[in-house]
Image (cartoon, rainbow, N blue to C red):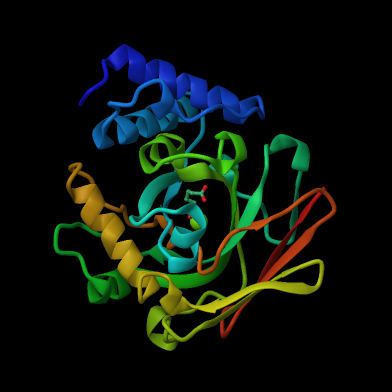
Length: 262
Ligand code: 0L1
Ligand code: MG
């Protein structure tokens, strides 16, 4: 690691304050260009620890930048991983206050709920499917704490991969009941289709993104625990939203989920 523990703590506090106080910042690598991958995930871990110390509960994990559309949109080439706590969850068909967010965007996701833990290295699609209890549609609300969503990969990892909120819903299906690669995904904003794609947009198979997450965690001595919710990554590019917008996601066989920004 390149950074001292006190700097990691300070950067975690800074980024979390930006989230809680709804204000943006410049990317942290401007000040610390030598920040390495371990530092970036250590800052993310400290943010999680801060939230848990205040009573939040870890409920899941997320894969980010897993589709070509998102990678192109963000000008990067590798996936990133983050955490989900209970306070990020929005009830299905629920409301989210725009004023609590800096510059929110939404992305359509296929979410996995695991019945068994997943341990890398060597985790693969079949292992993910065998460990999955069910899959459901999910909308992730991302809200980078970086001004104008301008960041590099290490800065965005430290910022918990822009995680802000999520909603899941629809019809839970066992993974052997659907072909996750060919699932059609349609996202609407105020009744207009704004993004569409298929499951395979996520690194060829959404379960492959979950396997990448398990393999990533194993390099850090961790696993994906049983019961975890895993957002496998945006199927399409992210779409900006504002107060008054209603967002609905329809996923073939898995039903619909929606939320409204107020
Ligand atoms: O979930 C995501 O794909 C977000 C990853 C972080 C980059 C971004 O803010 O779009
Ligand atoms: Mg996402």
